[in-house]
Image 1 (cartoon, rainbow, N blue to C red):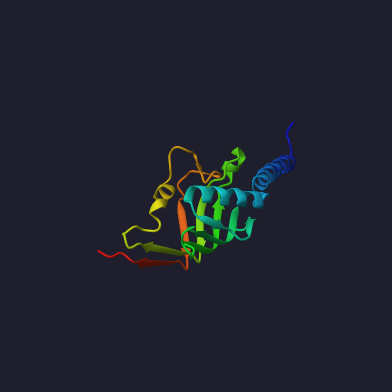
Image 2 (cartoon, one colour):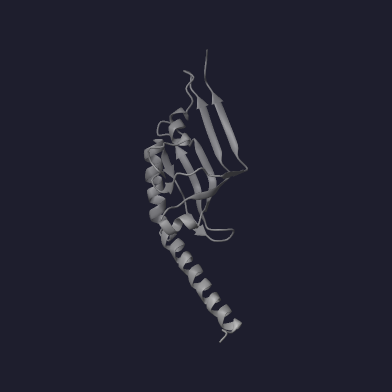
Length: 171
């Protein structure tokens, strides 16, 4: 007795749709509360960088892959007037499979309109020297800023970026 090909294809299609729906729901469940994710991200960034962090609107999308976009991101040193870093928006492309284990891993980071302002003081100290440990990462923890699991981000894309260097150093 042979099973008709139409029946096999129908069952296969139904199983595939159920699997896609389950993965989609798990991704949605991980990322649905972006306000909470944004608050946790700000708290952890402020704790690790010792900077005041501001993030505008946060939204997630699925066009071009699963991603989170943060608008109007800025880092301000509490002792300085202007922000050291600003970006029109920061988009993080997210890997899908780690979401199944409740981990968020970044596949690609896109910075749109970033401005980095580095100042060298009269003593010769750079304004971003204290961030060296944060930028190079710590092997003590497997999480990055308490949310994202520490992995090398394979690709960082900068669109219309600018670096300003102010030098007050005197020998």
